[in-house]
Image (tube, rainbow, N blue to C red):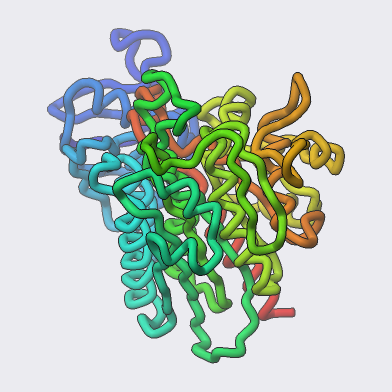
Length: 435
């Protein structure tokens, strides 16, 4: 079906303020003004709901952002659609780059955990970055290693090992280095650390079925950062960035970690496990320790970490927590430019005193009766970043996945945040090279 845009309201017969009308086997999306991208995305969802699977965008007002908005709404996890875009000139390559990176995030997140095991997540993520480098930079700019199984234990990555050792699918850690200059002594500009829990049963603190049925998406942070790095490469990223994905499957078995276990990390911090369903922070700790040792200008971690963040902001925003005001400001500037939703939640020094343990340095859950779950989770992570007050930002990425369809999104992964984080990387890298 041909789809056109119009700034003229629909005729009254289509209903008051109708978003869509039809004529001559064409659909017309009626937008309030040029740049009304939300209405375009809503209209795409409505068209999909009416059983339309093939769309040809034609006529006036189709430009990069309207095409992108339409694609966002038209996408579905079943991949049963096609969109033919108009000629966009120079913007066409940008549209294709966005689609490639966002689709990577959405597709790998939507795949069942029987396919996306920890090792498979690490491999596919590395392959994606290699393809991006081959297309937009140089394949030789990417070097990576995957540490898996008992090698994690032997090399000191105790959080990933402990969380993942109860599964038949071995845990894994991707350590990827994008170094476009190719020199071994090039300083690391940024480190990205992603939570890659490919399925989360909750472990012995087992989840109820209605909370477990979407836990294929618990690797959304790893997918988001991989997609963002890929888009930054497409946008000409010139600085060295290291990506760490902490991948495991949290299962129940005779070898699974248990409540009361104590984990000793490479930086000497000991952690008492009081809830095996608070496993994401345990695997991220290994990645943060590794990232912290790189002396990067800044570190960003992303994780579907807490239900508390989702209660606070729903599926509509990613939560951001940091004490670095400049880094926060840079992120929100990038988010505004890309029109993506982020919301700041509190993280203060006193939160670090709310994860006390009687048997270890800290516990993996809050120790106060009414605690701020997203804030105390961030406080936990801060114990693995030496200078946690500066150059570190944590994203609790609540907007990565929707259990049911809404007026803007199909059920499943959204890809939200890819553009913002790519923008942040490229903008800060540009400022560094210009400075």
